[in-house]
Image (cartoon, rainbow, N blue to C red; front, side, top):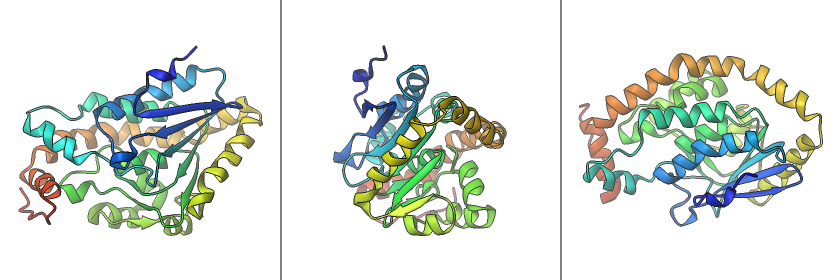
Length: 265
């Protein structure tokens, strides 16, 4: 029996073969801190081991899916000389998401930014609020899109559009994402979770063995891209740009609520 109560930043609900995973830090727009990052590393393995779960639904508490990294906590830890996320931890999260053979439905109920957007894009069916903002904004805080953004966005959006979005750190809306084929459906916010649950119920009632292995086959090129690029992109993010003057300036500017002044160093 899996003890889901040990999760503190994730809320896990199970019913009818479906596990609903809710990013549960609504007071900070479900921003990732170290604890949530660690729990997201673990949850996929627990779901794979749970014979009562055939499908997962991933969503966020409150008005946001997730605002990405908790920049204030990141700044405080940097000031204290502590590491926010290690390369093994960052790699483990993405690899564990990739190892989730059971289908995942993303219910993107609001803004999905940075790592949160990337994790959502690894899902199998994506339903987003029409006005939800989606994007990998690593570059806006002086960092490389190392934690899978440089992998998943080119695959989902195409190389030209991915370069535009990743190099500028721009957002697209749920409606834009549907038009571009990045997500399956963009719907009014109040319909996101009900529609996601409808698809989850269909998957849970289907031939789950065939569904699981079909996902594994479809994801094989994605897994190969992750194996090819992830270590290098994470290494550059954590060992080069993460300690750059531009990144330090970007984090200071965010905390001080001003525009950063980048110097390319």
